[in-house]
Length: 329
Ligand code: SAM
Ligand code: DTB
Ligand code: SF4
Image 1 (tube, rainbow, N blue to C red):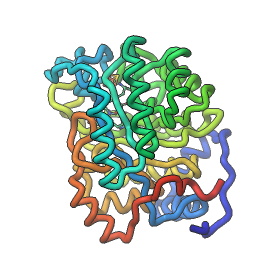
Image 2 (tube, rainbow, N blue to C red):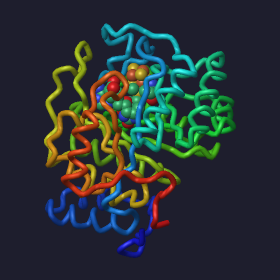
Image 3 (cartoon, protein in one colour):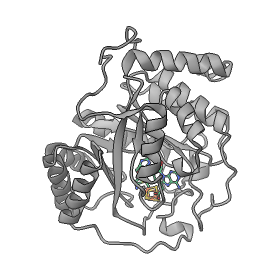
């Protein structure tokens, strides 16, 4: 698919002032700029489809205040064992048949134990052998664990910074923002593609949202994938009663993400069940070009496949075929 426009320069030297100015532009100007950048790098009518599976659920030692899986939140979700490798591969096969090209496997761990690594590697190899892209999100990683994942052929590692550095301690106290960046650096140095984004709706300000995107866009290389989650308020967590995000503010963040990181896949991630078709259409116009498909995320619901099929038909969207990739760089 030929691109409409010449690719924009990928910059990692964005300043706070210029980023803030972009965010606060008149909405129509912001969306026009984001869509223009988007068209220079991607087919605007194509959406990358990922599917998530929780391979180890609940009982997590971290205290992330948004998460249903933290043992410290008073959340009641029971801890499961690591899923059997064969079951993971058979779920991935179903996801592929339904049109997913990337399979993301998540574990409720602060960090993996070395004794679990052989099974994790077998999951990566098995899903790769199906011809899907692989993504894992397992918490913090040691040097040797990163290398083992790389050698198993892992394509992406998801590790979200979630919010700004200054708001981070309000959300999580069992690790620091710097811990998160350390793992991202290790993943990048090993040659695994980086997936990192955050959550809107945890009580953060517009400034925190801008700072979160700025932190990602000023890494030495942009993450190849940037998930933007809308908080799903989970019962029994400290954020169960958080105020919902204003949809226009949400779209502004997506547009800013697209402008700062023109060639990255921007994923409209958690929270789509609570979004209207119109809001999702605006997010996709603002430059989001990846979705989680299927009716389950990790522990929470996601739109039914039928609803997404109808949305795609209404908007004339197509799922991105595997390896079509970014066309601008
Ligand atoms: N334990 C690993 C970690 O924290 O990196 C992997 C799994 S964790 C559930 C992955 C990401 O899901 C979090 O970083 C967060 O951005 C997102 N997430 C978790 N709970 C959420 C919720 N209730 N609403 C929106 N996003 C959520
Ligand atoms: C991401 O940014 N969002 C996904 C994935 N990366 C791992 C997770 C969303 C989780 C939503 C809440 C749940 O299902 O428990
Ligand atoms: Fe654990 Fe990840 Fe949930 Fe935090 S977000 S409590 S690290 S599963």
